[in-house]
Image 1 (cartoon, rainbow, N blue to C red):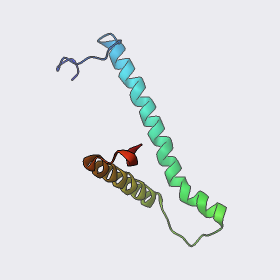
Image 2: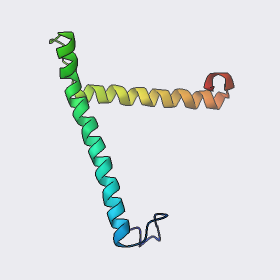
Image 3: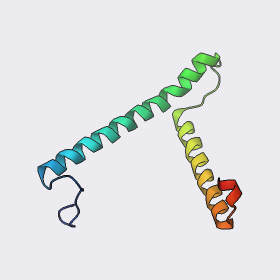
Image 4: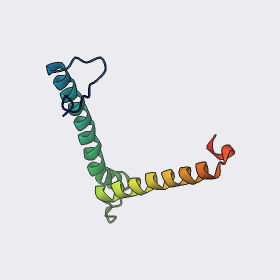
Amino acid sequence: NMQKYGGFIPGIRPGQPTAMYIDRIMTRITLAGAFFLAFVAILPNFIGWITGIQGVYFGGTAILIVVGVAIDTMKQAESLVLNRQYQGFMK
């Protein structure tokens, strides 16, 4: 698709070197994502073990939802602040 649309990666030769570079980058991204998801999946068990509270059912999906909502809320607040041009708040 890159060749079809005339795209290129600066500093990387077209053809096999580009394919190897993209494969290496995708492997790194996938590995980092897998470690993150494993951490999120184990986190509720780890918190239960540390605190000794076993009755709280707080799964990895709930953590992902909370983080997603928090990030979205931060983006909306930043957008409102920039629209209103509050310079003191953004420093």
